[in-house]
Length: 88
Image 1 (tube, one colour):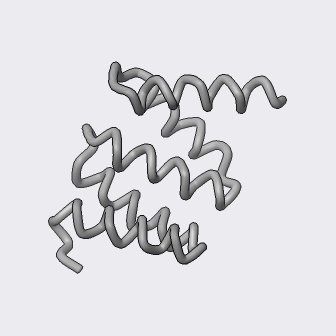
Image 2 (image 1 turned 90 degrees about the vertical axis):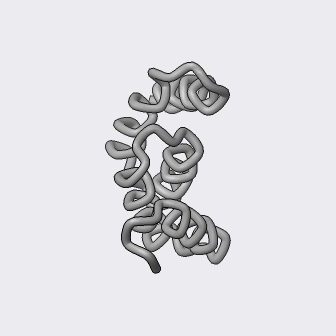
């Protein structure tokens, strides 16, 4: 693992997510997002891992950040955020 390369952390997180290890995935993906905060792809996958851990507060925080953008992941974040709030 290269500490400064967000791609390494991203792909490790995705692999851990596919292995059904959401907490480990979230740690790797949080590092990727910290190293490349403008990456919607990294943040979207982090949200997916966090959803599986049940960390609703952090999910909503990350969704709010992502929803402020203008790309396809931002639109998906707005939709998911609305579904989460509607479920309450």
